[in-house]
Picture 1 (cartoon, rainbow, N blue to C red):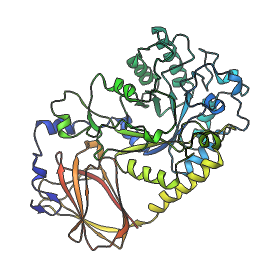
Picture 2 (picture 1 turned 90 degrees about the horizontal axis):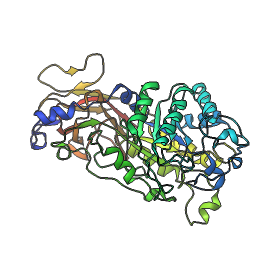
Picture 3 (picture 1 turned 90 degrees about the vertical axis):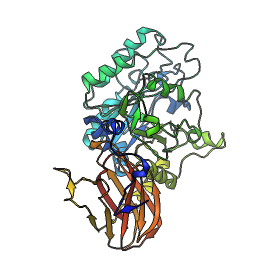
Picture 4 (picture 1 turned 30 degrees about the vertical axis):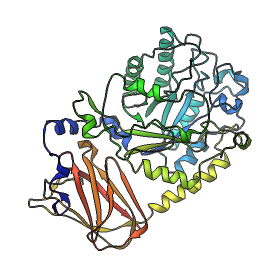
Length: 473
């Protein structure tokens, strides 16, 4: 294999330009997906009657009177999570138990019938605006309380509540639809009118992402923060894609989310996309909980089940590097406790996690960058992105000292193109990698001390377009 500067001239033995490649790189993010891509890391907050009943999945028979947080403070949620680098909060406005944490006209099974008697979504919306955080809504399609569940009438009920959430709380950045549904599901099977749900959101919140059981952002396939070896945002799409999420989601109540895994390893290779009629841009999102359950539980709850309570800060940091640094976004759940606060137990872990992330990216390493082409360097007008030329372009870095972390980004406005690349230090290969996409974080714990670093794109779908390269000490 001949290498001229930094791009393998045979492109891994596959052609650069042919009809299929043109089709692959025509799958590009929408304006709302581009805006969402800037989020990278944000939070779930699971909170509801389960917090007080000690359940993970309530059955809908809970008395609203058990819901009584004495110190609820949505400002505290925003302050604490913003310190971790989070850009937004997705809140459980209604979980599977059907208990609504907002003021709704369509059921009495809500916070307004509890001792608390306040619209928590409204309180959180005000706090998010105050602290410059984005607000997202989790609304469970499965409802174990609502009598119309299992009938067409339920679709109307769901749309009515969706409309309330779309119109009463300002700008919503994401609507998150869960695919989980227990065996039997109240003894009824609901045919969800997804298109009607999507149309409602597009009408009232056109910039909102529809995630998980939605067309804009896909579930990564597990609840452990594991990405694929090659995580593609360009994927095949069929009429069954949303149903597949539900089919592969959790079926029974329980803890141990670390072990829940439905990952199909190859989702976007050329072989996978070949002859597929509908190819779309749909990036991956990893939903992970700081604890080994989604709702807040006492330590003794886990002790009785012989389980650890929480992930360590180091484990969360690894998940962050693997997801945000593996062409996925990270949705980290931090539940509120019975007082309605983020508990000191979780705060300690969050602080330690934040320190690891901040220390990793604290010191930017300066370097000289050169592109070697026979023509002029081709930068994309109006941006700092550059397009590598076929068989000619090279990326050579001359770092000003030792570094431990490298971050690469493609300009995803032009799709995801890089299929594989290698990193060389003073001519010696130190890393083989697959895709880049919205972000690739490569860590070298022992550090790399070299005069020259070469990034060799060994296979790409048309000319690679690189947005940024960063090194950190």
